[in-house]
Figure 1: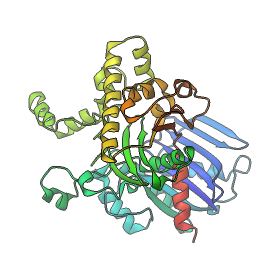
Figure 2 (figure 1 turned 45 degrees about the vertical axis):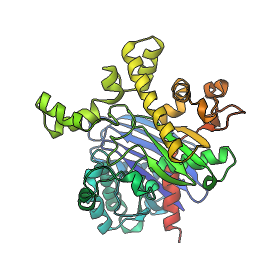
Figure 3 (figure 1 turned 60 degrees about the horizontal axis):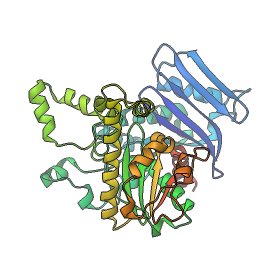
Figure 4 (figure 1 turned 180 degrees about the horizontal axis):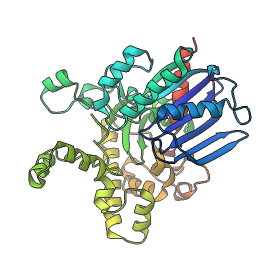
Length: 400
């Protein structure tokens, strides 16, 4: 069975075509700069690789049609007709608590998703666009499935997901912690448990997705019991451009002092804060780390704050679970930054944790244990494969 996974951004489409249940990747690629004069296109199969930067892709519908044209091309394609794609799995960031599982998409579900746009205003609209375009392009011959980022956190207990505001607002507007990065977490905890030879239902795990958007989650016996991102992705850790946790009164204070409205304050906490705001110049960790090595005080300030916030959450989640057996690093920063991992884990010896510096620095093997042989807490690095989880969940829904 051929299953196409789509992760639709505001100006991009990332895709993979899987042969299921074998989980073999037949083709993959992405289109960036959709709607600009020149789009960036990559298309890859086992026998062909194409990169283009001189074609204009006007919108997401044109982008998906372009992908189908390449998949069915007589020379470089891997299928003869789009009807050979049995189902399309779509990543959706936040559906709130409207549904409790991944679902086959119909018109009613599209409207439900449209009602949830304000729960993730940066991500949900392009996710929804990708889904609507897919339903239009493929028609009734292909099943569309929504795989939701927040479903992983669906069993979080009320004491963890409720905020200390009038309960009426939860009942009226469903204001609560939802959590994100769930598709990535589902993959990472499975990989981490396999690395230490344990059943996920028997261990306590702290798992981190560290990248442009960063979050950390406590998983006890296979269930997410708490996570750092909340009602929106702005809560929790310091991120690339998002503030993370702060005193909520700061918002009204700044609005009064700077004479700005809700739209501008939202822009500040989501696009001008994080390590960008703290360093005053960089939102990416490549430059932040370079600055730290050169003793740039702005970069050191941002790096120290970023790592400290994560360490504090590790301590909190160890307390919430009455211990921890495994800590997992994932995401662009988590996978590729030994100095960040070392900084975060320093000072956690009270947990019985000991890092193997040689294993931590060896990046030849991405998925690996980096804790020392005598460490009571295992630490590992797991490469994130969200597309594979989307393909699996889609296959599980449609195979019968």
